[in-house]
Image (cartoon, rainbow, N blue to C red; front, side, top):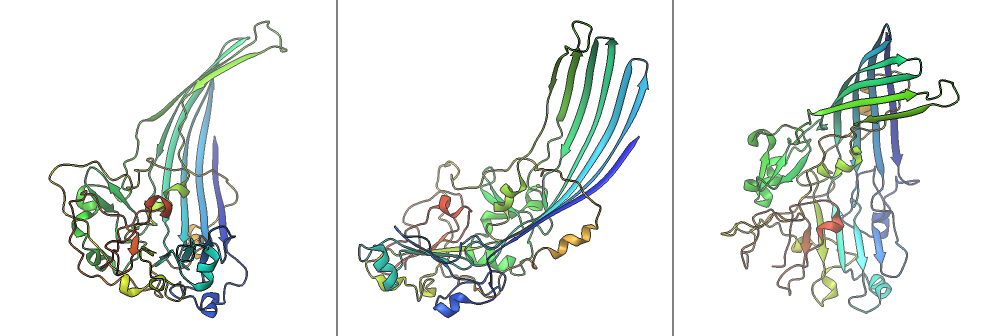
Amino acid sequence: MELGVSFSRRTNNQGWPDNTRDWAADAGFTGGTKNPVALGLPQVDVTGYITLGHAYDLPKIWSYNNYQYNGSFTYIRGRHNMKFGADFLRYQYFSRNYGDTRGRMTFLGRFTNAPMADFVLGWAQSTRRQLDAAGPYHLVSNYSGFFQDDWKISPTLTLNFGLRYELMKPPQEKFGAWSMFVPSLGQIVVAGTGTLSDFDARIAATGLQQYVAKAAGVGMSRTLVRPDYNNFGPRFGFAWRPFGGTKSVIRGGYGIFYGTSSLYRLDEYSDTYPFSINESYSATSSNPLLLTVSDPYPVAKRRVGAPSPAPSRPSKPSTTSPPVPTPSTTPARSPSAAASPNRCSSALPTPGPNPSTNPPTPVAPSPPASPARRTPATSTANAAAPTSTSATPSSPASSGRPNLLTTSAP
């Protein structure tokens, strides 16, 4: 009999030197985060020139804990060498995403035909920011069991038979800060309220209550996806010495194996509405003073809109909706020494909304010009100049995450 217990831990805290100084305030940039973990300059993109400022996706903070327990039993009888075993893997993944909390600005040369001239004058083409940090606190459990038999049929031929069963359960966000769009329901389904004290107010501010549902209310679990209980993996192999000696051996085998994607790919389901809100502003007027470096996120142009009424005939689901993830994920196993699971709580700052930024002030949405799809609008907020009839929407694909805030010109 063999028994094993192992623990491994990996951490990452990637930032930049001396981020204790508020460089944005010293340089006159406004609207960025005041969280001391992510202080810094906004990222400035001037077409044709190198990017200025701190990278928008820093700091990167995460930690990984693996707890593994396994046991096996070997039984030999005659020509049979049989082995039974089981394995349990419990792992925890914590991550905080501060992308765009300092803001980002783009200069294309719209007003002077020279991108650098627009930058020197402070006339931005577009700006964006994330109002608060987001990230998952995943808890995952995997179970497996196996049986194998090495059957020595003759001195020159051995057959191997086996069967393995895997139950890889989907990740569960500890606080319920997990959401995705479910096309069959036409709604965004949230696992819980996360650590947001203003969760209900955020939903009410957008007027999207009918498009947001809690998992328990629609018959879904807090993981939002169903586990796969059919992961049976048969095994077969052989070893044959055709000439009876030890110099030549022919080996072969067949098996079915199951694997999963990395947990990193599921971060976007926590880094989305309503647990993270992003704003985007675009210059849609010939007046360069409506979106400037000194006022990159004009409050007067901020508007929260609700989706238009559903059309009379069904339409295809929006292609901007997040895909349903694979049932579960498993990281690479790297056992080392045993440790207490309570250590994981110190790896990250306390999750929650950034108190230094203010959520958009809701106003009554403008009546739609024509019926729109029933699926919720994307959450990128687009501020436009008052002389334009509508905002220039940002591409959801470029933001990397769905959102439900939209803005348009008055």
